[in-house]
Length: 323
Ligand code: HPA
Ligand code: ZN
Image 1 (spheres, rainbow, N blue to C red):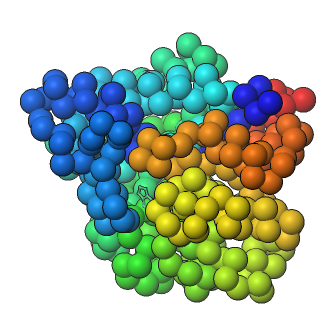
Image 2: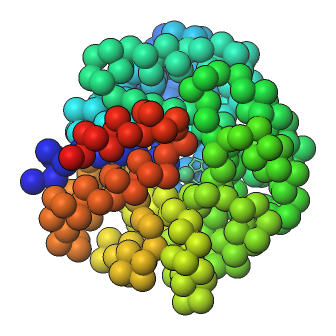
């Protein structure tokens, strides 16, 4: 039932989307041993810190423009086969630099993969530049300045990922001001590893259109009401939250409670192979857990498209595919 539903996802880290098969091929290409972070049953990690280490180790195996083109093409072609018509991917200038590729080549490589996937399947994709919170405010400001320079037409948003328990949200306000002034869409990871205060701080200091995760806003009823009232869209990633132990299981996840409270919710995969998920799996699990029918699932797709960081003509075209 869920397979035929058109899907859209607005929260996925491109390096985190590298499949074990692709990472093994990259490791063979560069003669790198992956045993420390990749086993027979996939990525090996045990908590958020070791997850980030596995993520960084896999990311370091993408080093050329063609490596990144292949990464984006593989990911987008796979999710298009699951019914995705639109995807946003988080891209990280810091990870590009660590891999030894210039950020310009990083973006043009990814864009090449995006174009190939679109030619094969029709899927639309945009890129959101993220700063990495635990690299500090200056690094995030540098990422924001880079994004604000409009380095590629497919870069349409700015966000912040990384360790949410690091630093204070207010320290990053300048970075977000820079990005907002350049007309970029704004999102920030909050309410994943830290609680409701983190989400409230993000709303107060950074005025994002969307919150990455935001699931732990559930700890504060007044905050959930505020999110609903202000129309802030939550990029919820239930499979990721369950895998990282933020919630015990799917039925304990606040997705349905938030939806009933009038929050604009979307379904997303975050770092799909790390969490043994995919956008198709998120839709299927949501339907199995909360009994959604195709029309309800399509509503989540519609919300994601309404909140997408994309030009209005393309948004209308994509919304038309739901009719
Ligand atoms: N949270 C924060 N930072 C991240 C994540 C995540 O789930 N994935 C990759 N970077
Ligand atoms: Zn994320």
